[in-house]
Image (cartoon, rainbow, N blue to C red; front, top):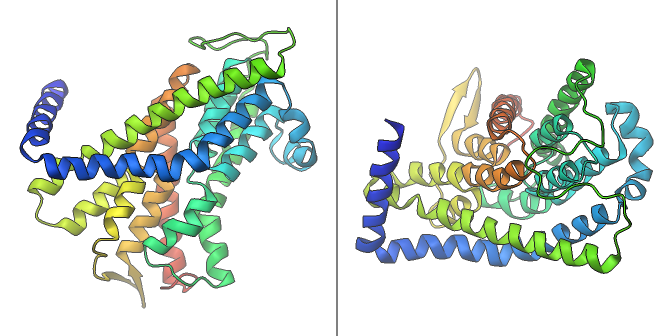
Length: 332
């Protein structure tokens, strides 16, 4: 039954690509431009440098300043700490990229990688504060609002991750570090790797991964074509677009921001659009899940487990933002 639904949808989409080629071109161009102008300049250098560091086994030295605090807080190894730091600082999909890279090289176990990718693969702070918040109506932030938004976007996943890591260590299901996960493209080598070999591998792997990300961004933007073509409520479709492909959806929002709609909770008014958009940013969108699945499958990790984690984090974020708006910690 599900295959028939997919068949009908993709046949319809293929027909629309021919009949409504102008609109299809706009959506495809949107995904391609976002990839070229936003993702490549900000992401590809980090992917290459991170891959070089892990190839030369330099991540332990990089994490040394953070080791004492995070090791006692979460009972983590240096490699696990590295995934968290890079994931939170550099943003999606670096958390998944690093976790898969270290899992494939046997430096962290599959169970650790699965747990790490669930909470350290979020929208990057530079994109979140410099672009996303302004697109959804947060133009002026007080220090209190900044803290609330920062905690909602990164504090909730960190707390979720702390609980998950604690639960993982209590179960004591860790594999030995020498075990290489099934399906990994390469095995751990004890022979020294030269700088040129590490750089060549990093560029090759990062370039291939970045090209795959481009395909996902273009595809998931084009998947919105039937909704824009036949939908009547364009505001609702743009919101749906954000849950499909977050960057493209926010760009489409700029054409016509929805009117301010609020629902009453006690004596407070909660802005619907901003609450939903902040939840969508916490979730990341289906395109982000598709892009992350590339790295998860390389390391033999579960995509469904990752999706469940993102849904849990998004639900927690939704109630958190409702609380913040209702008590005046956030306002427009």
